[in-house]
Length: 224
Image 1: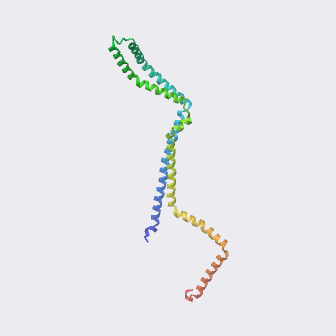
Image 2: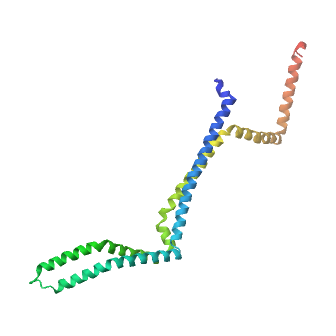
């Protein structure tokens, strides 16, 4: 038999490595899982704060201010478009057909110029309507992908690390566990034998003593 397996120092070093590995797995798993759970909780808190009445009104006020500013910026262009449209209607196509074409081109250029602002105004109207009629519970359910995956993955990593690390740590203490089980079971087993088979135990003990006495009687004197 290889004597290395019976080396106590080697056993202690291996046991310490196993304990270190198990501890690292638990610590790293809890750290990663905890960070993910914290991220999910942070997202959920931020989402809940977003739909409080105070924050909803604040957002609506900001959107309305942005909309008013955009409308003020494009109003001169809209006035110019209306003036060109009026001129186009008043122009005689038989007398000044080219002017009508020029007016149409000018209107098209102006409409392209203000189109981004008009699109943003429509988006703002939709956001204001959405914010006014938003329900916290419903919105939380719709946007659950912003926090539930963090809770699920973080919890799984934390639990898995505890299970794996705990199994590794228990294997490092296998000798102590076996010794404890033996110490816990043997007295109970002895008491059970004494209680269930008292005569058998007494007879076995007597047989052991008789056999020992006979062996001593048969020994030569110089071995006694």
